[in-house]
Image 1 (cartoon, protein in one colour):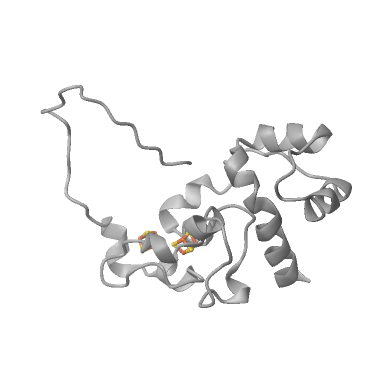
Image 2: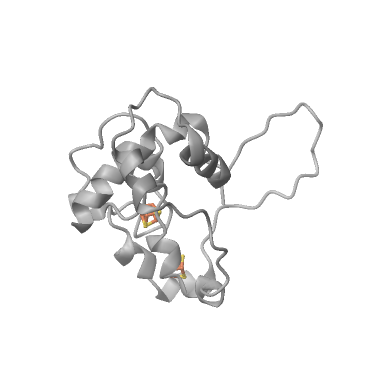
Length: 152
Ligand code: SF4
Ligand code: SF4
């Protein structure tokens, strides 16, 4: 899922706006707070502090901040720790579409790729098939390196 923002001058006075609120299930559950590797979820409000969320950091150019624990990294793009553990998502556990997979050779190619060079061949096609934008694809190398350090 990707959140996108669109702007329009179309009148929408009748828009169905609701105040921000938690689900009732959240009152007795803190699974996502416990699972979050960067303490990005406010314990009193269960609202994500986006500046601390790995999903944001993974898509933001530059070095990761020092306060991000090395063990926190778990995905090349995004992070699913809070959604994986949520009881409200349990029924979707087996409802996951298989995405693009990279061979070992392609993974090695990613690791030695020059950041400003365009991707070519099968790697280019596979990255395109993931839906990752060309801007974000520059972050792949950094994220992959950090992730591999973490699991090696
Ligand atoms: S894991 Fe799900 S149900 Fe539990 S507190 Fe977080 S959002 Fe609410
Ligand atoms: S996506 Fe990851 S880092 Fe962001 S709030 Fe959820 S568990 Fe925390």
